[in-house]
Length: 558
Image 1 (cartoon, rainbow, N blue to C red):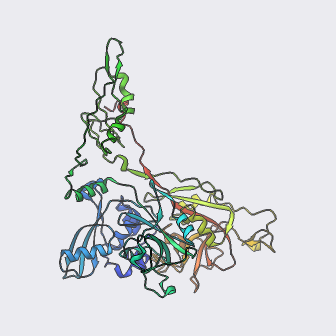
Image 2 (image 1 turned 120 degrees about the vertical axis):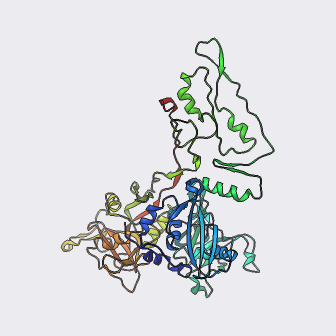
Image 3 (image 1 turned 30 degrees about the vertical axis):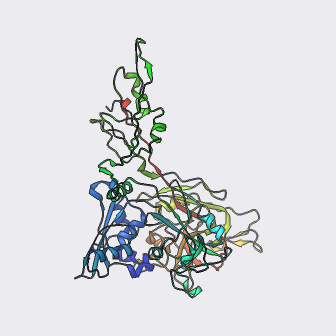
C-alpha cells in the first residue's frame, strides 16, 4: 500500500480545509493507521486521521460498546458548552466529551463511532451518504439511489437540516445534486410540503448563489444525486441509545445489554412429551416450537441469557440421543462463536450484529464474472470487467452507477494482477488492426468507420492529482490520483508502467485508463483520440450477518 503520510492525506479533504485541525503526532501512513485501528468504517478512519487522532480507542476495552476518537480542532472555546458546540459543528458523530483549551487556541473533542458504512459512503449522524456523479433528471436520480444496502433500501438523501452543509463538504465533487426536502416552505414562500430540490455546492457559481443553497428546478433538468441509507444496527449503537434514554425511561443497563421493563408478560410452558428409549415412560421434550409466536405477542426479544447452559434447537438435536433425564436449557438467542469449553455460558454477545463482507454479487449481462479481492485492511472489493461493450467515459460511469459501483481502481499489484486475468478485449469481426511498430492500433470495427480503442479500459482516476499527491519516493507531486473512493494507493498508480503514454499533467483534465496489451496505466483528455473504451467497474461487497456457528455440543466440546 502507498505510504500516504498525514499531511499528504489532508489534500484529500481540500473542501474540508477550513475545518481541518492542526495535525499532531507521528507521521504515519493512512494505511498503517487503518491497520492499527480496525473496527470502524473507512469514512470514520479518514475523519479520525485527518483531525490528528493518534489512535482509535475501544470503549472500555469492549468492541461491542463502540469506538472513540480524541481530536483537537482549531477554534477558541471558553467553556465546556462552547466546546461541545464547536465539536458538534464539525464532527457528525456522538460527542461524548468536549473541553476548551483556551491557552492553545484549540478545542478538544472525543466522539463515538457505533455504526459502519460501506467504503464509498460517508457517515453523517447515523446515515450513510454517497454522491452519484452522473447527471440525470429527477426520476432517473431516484432510480439510481434505489439500491439495497445492509437490509435497507437506499433512497434520495433527505436534506433535513441546513447544518448538513457542514458535513456534505466532506463529500468531494458535489456540484449540484437532487435531494429530498421535508418542507420546501422553509426555503421558498411558494414552496409546497415534501418536495425534491437541488442542493448546490461547488457549482454555486453557475446559479449565482452561495454554496449550501437549495434550489427548485424542473424535474427534467439534469443534476447529480446524493443517496442515503441507514446502516445496520450494532450492539454498540443499542448500548449507547439505551444509556442515553435510560435518563428518561427506566432502562436497566448491564454488561449483556439493556432490560426494558414492560407492563405485559407471559409464562411459556413446554408440555410436549416424547417416549423414552425404553418406552416405559414419557419424558419432557424441549424445543422452541411456538416460542417466537408467543414472545412476539409481548414484544421483540433482543437477547436471552440462561444458565447452566445456553443452546439452540440444532445443538439440542446433536445431543438428544445421548440424553435420558438430563435437563437442556433452550433460548431464543443464538451464538456466533459457541460456548467456552469449561463454563457453558454464552460468552459472545455479538449475536445478530456481527457482520462480515459477503461474496460479490453477479454482474450485469455486459460483465465478466466478478473478480473478488480482499484488500489488506479487510475490505472485499468487486471488479466487473466489460470486454465486449465500449462506451464514452460518462456512459461508462452511468453503467457502473446502475450496479451501485464506480469506475474502478487498484490498491496493489496483487489486486491489479487478479483483475488483469479477466481482461480480454473482444473486437467485432472485420475490425481493423495495425501493428504500428510495436504499439498496435486497434479499431472497434473497420478503420474508416470504426472507433480506435487500442485495448484501453476506463478506470476511476484523474489528473491533475486531487488527493494524497506528495510523491515521497521521487520528491515531487503525483501526476494523477484515484477517484470516487475506489482506491487509495496513488504510489501504485503513478509508479507503475506507463508505456505508450505521456504521463504528465496538462492544462486540461485527464482521465486514467488501462492499456491491457501493454499492462500500462495511461492518462489523456476526455476528448482525445479515444472517444470510447472498454471499462471496469468496482465496488465494495455488501456486509451480512456473520454465519451462526454451533457450539459443538455434540462433538465433545462440553
